Image 1 (cartoon, one colour):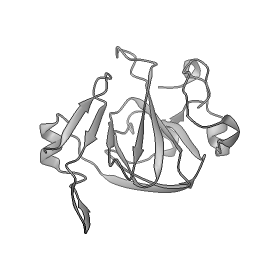
Image 2 (image 1 turned 30 degrees about the horizontal axis):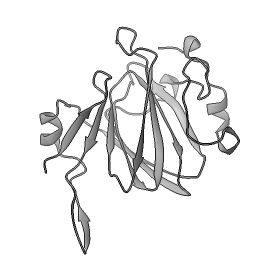
Image 3 (image 1 turned 30 degrees about the vertical axis):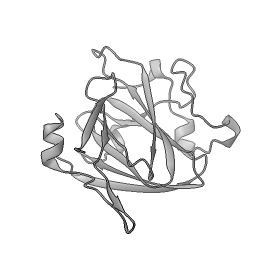
Length: 182
């Protein structure tokens, strides 16, 4: 079975399903191949890898970077399970202001390619999770932005009780969708 790139209904936002080869010893798959990603219509040069470990209920996001430090990301799970959420911030996109969510897990091995112009976040659904992602641009604190995870205008179902959500102080203070900077 070849590597699959699945459309999400959002221009440029792609769900990647690798070809996993498994037997009684375990499994093997190519988590990233420049050739396969080019064939899937994704041609970015990744320059930085990031990894985070979190416990159940930790919500990180919704984060983005503004130009000239905007970032495309390829996100996946190494351990556990998250609900991964993006919000389209591209003003001329047909999906502007809409959110998309997908469960990513170490078990399903799915990856999400998030193009530049999206806010991104996730909440941990399992006891613990190790989240890994590639970026096509470097992080810059002065170019960082974010959205409130609980903005009623976005109407995101984080799939866990609100009382279980654990946020950083920074993530509590992000503005609502209509008040964000681009």
